Amino acid sequence: MPEEEAVIYRGRIRMPYTWAVGETGSFFLTQLRDHARIWGTRCPQCRRTMVPPRRNCPRCLAKTHWLQLEPRGSLVTYTVVHYRHRIHPPQEPLIYGVIKLEGADTGLTHLLGEVDPADLRPGLLLEAVFKEPEQRRGHILDILYFRPREVTGS
Amino acid sequence: MTNVAIVGAAQTPYRRRRDDASLAELVHEVTVAALADAGLEMGDIDNIVTVSNDFWDGRTISSMAVMDASGSSYAGGKNVSTVEGDGTFGLFYGAMRILSGVYRTTLVVAHSKGSEGDPMMITNSMFDYIYTRPLGLEFISSCALQARRYMDKYGLTEADFALVSVKNRRNALRNPYAQLAGELTVEEVLASPVLADPLKRHDLSPISDGAAAVILADSPVALRLGRKPVWLKGGAFCSEDHFLGDRDLAEAPALREASRRAFEMAGVTDPFREIDVVELYDACSYMELLWLEEMGFCPRGEGGTLIRSGETAPEGSLPVNPSGGVLSAHAVLVAGLARVIEVVLQLRGEAGPRQLGPKPVELGLAHGINGPCGQSHCVLVLGA
Ligand SMILES: [Zn+2]
Image (cartoon, protein in one colour):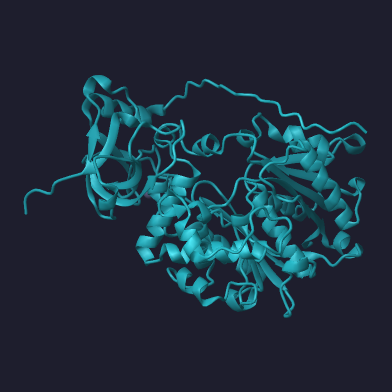
């Protein structure tokens, strides 16, 4: 029997898509782009306000209505990522967080910036930092990241 | 109504890379071995459930690539259908086909090679393409968000999680199918490179290649075979919200509900006392503790106390992952079916060096997950 050789075939899949975001996502993303506003959807039955927005409440299936949220909130959980891959946005350090926006009952997963990793803790007060208007293109990364915010008043 | 038994089981060893075998060859290897284990031939199998995922395999209708290898064309063709998700869900579906009364024997076969694609890109692709995927979140970083939340809510520590890695990698020393095995110390786990804090190298399961198959049969077929059947006493699966921010990641209500239903079906009222072995999906160290809480083996938030008590070691009163678990071999989709097979071997008394005892193993739990941070859970209660 001849000597066995394991042949490895190197392939690559490049697959373009043109995903329709849908009417709910389209409103959300154009509001981000044109007004730097973050909108959530509210369920009329369980009264939960959720972001990212959904046409229907996942738990009641009821049709939701729009509610504008403040572009600020508090940190629920977070991680500092120590590896890099081309899927990652160019961000140093690379920090993910789940942020509960004021007025929302669910958290938005996004990036954190302008923060020392040593200062991260649950409950940290944050605000959204948007890209410059001419750079916004109707995309979740029109929000650059969330950063700690100064607490004024009281 | 009939009962469903597992009458045959086989798995490949799990390795970082299997250059010697294609996906179809892995499937053929375990199909033939599971038939031999059951004492059946392909002609005795009246339907097949394959378990695969197109992104991992790098093709569409990935099931089609392994149908020849699983016997789909045998003697004029068989009824084949496919589950895209963990192998436990494939088993559940295969069992329902027998319960329908239309089929008497089901081959369930799962395969995957983590080595051939790009796990970062593939697991990034489990997220929605509008809101989450562009952030670059993938398996490790999403699990890190869950681990952090779990620590913050209940006061667990990285050392608690490290104890799971120490236990399971040590258990794997007695499992020739495992990929990673060794004597680790808590200090070594804590000192291993941080990937996405609080998760470090030794908190994570490896990337693996492998396949596994089980053969299910109705009671008359199972009782006719010479081998002691393993009965499916209870089973359920449940899902919860997809978006991570919709959930409290320190809890898994879908697992709580799936466990409740599976235990009720199996007549289990005190799982800690009645279950002799648990094989669960510990893709990361912290998951073992969180999943045990939600299965009801300890109060919520007490997973750290449970691992520190030593009760989940092989010599404890509730051995968990005596095989080494997913932390020691993680062929995606296959890993849940591997949990089933490990429980089957324990119930038969055929687990070799990792056999529990001296008390006989009479009732076991096997568990699988699908989706980010355990979005859905399958719980199977198996008994001798
Ligand atoms: Zn609702």
